[in-house]
Figure 1 (spheres, rainbow over the protein chains, first blue to last red):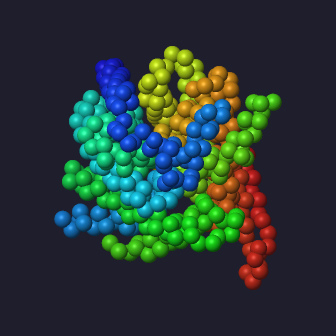
Figure 2: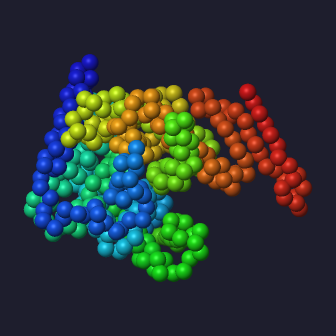
Figure 3: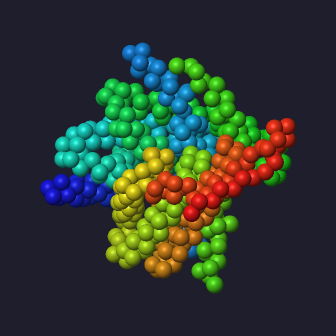
Amino acid sequence: MNNLIYAVIFALVMGGMYAALYALNHRTPVPEGCENLKEECEGCTISNCGNHPSQSKIIEGE
Amino acid sequence: MADLFSMAIAAILINNIILTKFFGMCPFLGVSKKTSSAIGMGAAVIFVIMGASIITYFLYHGVLVTLGIEYMQLITFILVIASFVQFTEMFIKKFSPALYKSLGIYLPLITTNCAVLYVAKDNITQNYSFIEMLVNSFSVPLGFLLVLYIFSCMRERLDIASTPNAWKGNPVALVAAALMALAFSGFAGLV
Amino acid sequence: MNRKENFIAGFVKENPVFGLYLGLCSALAISTTLDNAIGMGLCVTLILTASNMIISAIRKITPDEIRIPVYIVVIATLVSAVEMLMAAFMKELYANLGVFISLIVVNCIILGRAEAFASKNGIVDSALDGIGMGLGYTFSLLLISGVREFLATASWTITNPFNNQSFCTLVLTSLNHSRFPCSIHQQVHF
C-alpha cells in the first residue's frame, strides 16, 4: 500500500517537473536569427519529421 | 579495459543500433538528406543519450529500487528523457544561440527517438555497472552518428543520380539502406 | 460518410507505415512472424484507440501550454498497463516482442494522432480514427511479416497467444525432391 502512495507521488513529481520545464522552455524567447528554423529546414524529405511542412498541413487540414 | 573496448566496438559496428536493431529508423530516414543535418542530429543524440542514461541509471537504482516501485520504470524514463530534452533546449537557447541555430530544430524530435528509451532500458536490463553504462551509452549513439553520416553521404550522391521515377526519393533510399546493412553484417565476426 | 472516408484513408492513402513512414522501427524489427505482427498490431490499435479517447475526453480541460506533457503521461500509463497485462497473460508473445512493447510509448503514430486528431475532435470520431489507423498499421505489418515468415520457414502459422497452441499451419512441402513446389499441406486445429 505504501508503495502505491510512493508511486503516485513519484509520478506526480516527475510529471510536474516535465510540465514545468516544458512551460519554461516555451516561454524562453528564441534567440535572434532562429525564428524561422522550421520554415528553413531542408534536411527532410520524409513526412515523419515534425518539422516537415506536410505535418503542419495534416494538423491544419483536420 | 579490453572488455570495455570490445563492448564499444560491438555496439558501434556489430550490433549497430540502426542496421541490426532497427531503432531510430525515423531520424535515419528523416534527417539524412544533408550531411550537415546528419552530423547535427547525431551530435544531439549522443548528448541526450549520455545525459538521459546517467540520470535514469541513478533514478532507477537510487529511487525506484529503494522504494520498491520498479513498475514505474517506463513512465519515469520517458518523463526523464522528455524533461532532459526540454532542459537542454532551454539551456542552449539562453546561453548559446549559435549552437541553437544548428541543433535547435533536432532537439524536440529526439524525445520520440526510440534509441534513447532503448539505451536507457538496456542499461538496466543488462545489469551494467556504472562504467559499462557510460561506455554503452556513448558508443551506441556513436554508431548511430556513424551510420547516419555514411547514409547521408550516399543520399547526397543519390540525389544527383538519375533514378527511374518510381524509385525516386524513399524507395531508392531504402534499397541503399538495405545494401548498407548487408555490408555491415560483414563485421559480425570481429569481436 | 466523412467518418467512413477517414476510416478508409487510414488503410490506403494515409497508411501509417507505407504512406506516412510512421512507426518504422517497430514495423521492421518485429515483422518476422505473423504472430508477432498480429500481437503488436492489436496492441498498438488498443493503445491508440484508448489514448485517442482519453485525450479527446480531456481536451477541454487540458491547459494548452502543457498539452504534450499530458499526452505523454497518458500514453506512458496505458503502455505500462498493457505491458504488465501481456507479461501476465501472454508470456510467449511478450518474450518475442520484448522491448518493442515498451517502445510503443515513443511510436510516432500515437503522439502524432493525439496531437493532430484527438485534440480537436469528439470522442467517437477519435476512437474511430484510432481504430482505423491502428488497423492500417496492423495490415501493413501483416503484409511485411507474411512475406518474411514465408521466406524464412516456407509456412504460415497462427498461434493463440494465451496458451501458445497453434490455430492453423500452412506448410509448403516438396513431394518430389527434383521439383519445387508441389503441394501445400494445410493443418487446421480448432
